[in-house]
Length: 308
Ligand code: PMP
Image 1 (cartoon, rainbow, N blue to C red):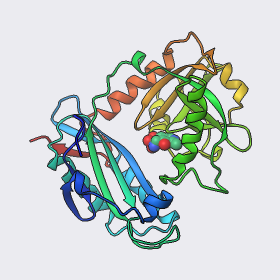
Image 2: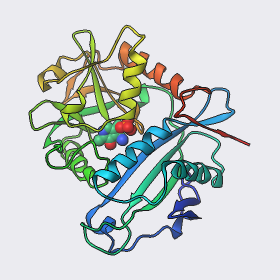
Image 3: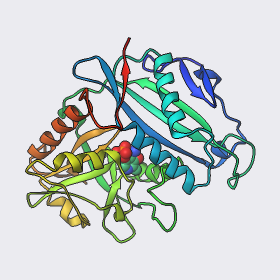
């Protein structure tokens, strides 16, 4: 196995650090056969004073991991505090001193079928991830996919399960075939839900709006951060159902999520949104988000690592 430059050498697998090519799961496992897993994608940010890396809202991510595992009855052998420690150990083993992206997975690696109740295996990987801080390079084209977002009554989108991303994949393949970058899913009621790997926010009639948690979306940590950050701005986020027709009248539209952070969407199904470039509110929220995640002192759920 060869490594790309951004990949790192060591991963946490089970109860220890191993070389990443040693982190293998059986082909017969429920994860391999049925996509049974829960996971989190988390970002670490080098703070402005460059003295610490802020693993942004790590405690909240690990709480969501436990909620997901609980809902699917996948026992986790470690406590939240032990997983947090394992994240730090994995970063240290790889000498991470800059922005990074972490994946914490609970994999179902024992033999058994999709109904296995065996404990999951903890897997933590970290990659160096230098995303540029310019909004223009992040512009996406979107289209509403014909696929509907998974529904709470069938496969809860609030559970961050690996298999949920098969629904994301259908939507992605659908719009990609039409030449667009990302899908926007409607829910079974016909209202806007979310994208394939991010939530959405739109400026409609001068108001910054995002679909509510009841719209069949992941309880996004980035969305929650932006709602808080908007609190003392002139664009307080309103959570309400959005009809797809309204999106076409939006003056701004953007994706938000840990991986994408904030990405402007400047066209929907080939129709230009606003002026076809990142708008004022998107820029303001992006600046607020970057200064929040790179802040050397933050909330209790920020974990600080000494770089030395
Ligand atoms: N929705 C979906 C389907 C996602 O995969 C993600 C990325 N985890 C998000 C929303 C954004 O969630 P978060 O801000 O917690 O990363």
